Amino acid sequence: MALGTTWMQEIVDSIMNDGDIEKSKCAPTHIRSPFLEMFAPPPLPSGLDVLNNTPSPRKIKTHLQFELVPKSFWEQKCKAVYFARNAKDTAVSYYFFDQMNKTQPDPGTWDQYVEKFLKGEVAWGSWFNHVIGWWNAKEKHDILYVFYEDMKEDPKREIRKVMEFLGKNLSEEVLDKVCHHTSFKAMKENPMANYSTVPDIILDQARVPFMRKGEVGDWINHFTELQNKMFDEEYEKRMKGRGLKFRTTI
Image 1 (cartoon, rainbow, N blue to C red):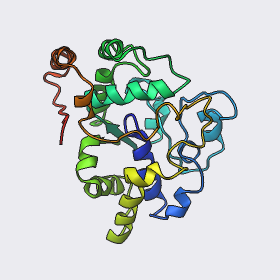
Image 2: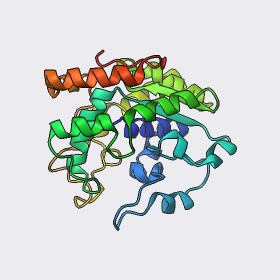
Image 3: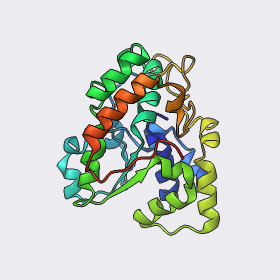
């Protein structure tokens, strides 16, 4: 899970199904929560194709920066759960994801990728612009901003926040069931959540598994001292005074 989007999709789907896990196992993630901007070679349908055939209430996935989200979403009073992960772990996770994702350009070496990441020369653009754009928008729109690190620290606490935001009222027993179903171990073993149904021509999981680690702080295993210094300097410049704080370890 690069950013944890698939994790949040499974959480939202489980909550909207009132904790009925069998319903959440009825189809792969990309069918239950269509990817708005996805366009991949057959046999996968485009995100819009799936959405057009999905009844309300629909659960939609997007990696779009806030400014690119269709205005109709907000005009129709849609709710959005934004799942944010710290920049260093995001860079590492996306580097490995791009190695296995055949629809993405080759990421090059790790050293090259760090530089591209800091410049925003990666899919969906600058991490800085992305997290800041959604952070600023949450005051004007129905947006719940959730941190990956908080979810790893206390899944039940954060899942409860999502549940309340979605207007659901699940029992403690059902919440526990949702927590178990959406744990990394359970999702890694669930073919409806681990993307094993996607053809190898698109996602080469023999090279890198889609569910790789799902940890906070894996960046420590990959960043050199020089890369970390360069990253911290750019981070301070871009994030200073934003009121947006991320944890890189827990």
